Image 1 (cartoon, rainbow, N blue to C red):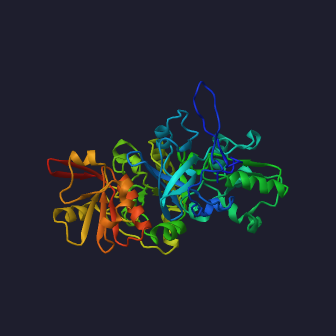
Image 2 (image 1 turned 60 degrees about the vertical axis):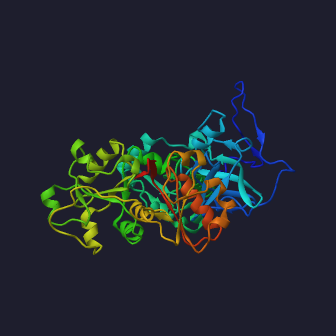
Image 3 (image 1 turned 120 degrees about the vertical axis):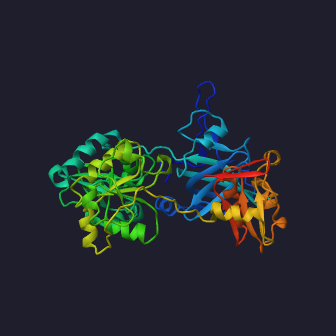
Length: 467
């Protein structure tokens, strides 16, 4: 992760001053106020050693009002405060040097490196770098149009091997048709997956333009003597913007159903055929047109959409392509269709299919449902504290009766007001600062804390809560 920046003690900042790009020092010798134990995501540890006072993970959100940002490192979310006047930000997608624009321009789940310092027991982000695109020799790259043509022919007719370099859990989320999985972290243990012919075209791809796993796989393959190796740098994210991916029945069972992960399931066969035997929860979807597209969740929800037909060779591909063209992603065709489902011994139903796709994202850790929150604020129990983590000026415009106002940036300074034996529920205008308050309290050892991930408006005492 972030391997294309070779010296992390210098933070390359694009400062638009007179058109000059300058570099600012990341760390000065006398600046550390306190060190923090460094942490890397598992994927980052493949290439990078853990460094003191450094987090390598995925950007989640920023709250400018509370001068806080949130970064996820594997299963733990770190809430970090920052000083707007001194934090150094490098975001290759935003040329404007304005700190707020730079921070807000970092996309959710984008890989970042954060230099952290400890001030009075509080973690501060001293600098943050959004991972830039990986540099690959142009001669080693293959364009998406070429990949599409080869995939349409298939590996045998096209005389190529397509390799997904991501770890298995990501491959189980869907892959490019015809691709095999050879995770870069386990490359040396799976050399038997490489073709015997050293002149055969090999195409590696991974998680997009910032991912190092496919370029590093290319390097390893060339070291083994392979002569015709390419990288499809846009990877799975780029493919899903143009084409459907593939999902196997085995992966649906193991990575989705068994883990209770939500998804949308569409039956692309004629309705009369589908009614004879279909997969539970499926919606009849024989064509992707203006009428049927309205049956899907909103695009911004980004619900995973799985499309199946009789055997994977029928209408599913055309339907899936129509859905992709309409702007939905990710869309995946079930390999082998309902025949593969039956072969796996999985249950089928008969009769009327679902009228509309139902999709409810899996709640985040600590998230309280809107219904349960409404019950709490109707009559706040004695064992519960509702905290409004907005700024005092915002609270003046309207607040939930009985809530305690503690701004998100000050939660860790007001622990005495929040007994650990109480149930604590945080809310704000949108859920962003409430989630940060939740992670702050969890980090302080609070066992019974929750947050509302929703928009809250209070007008003359009337509370309106929406997603």
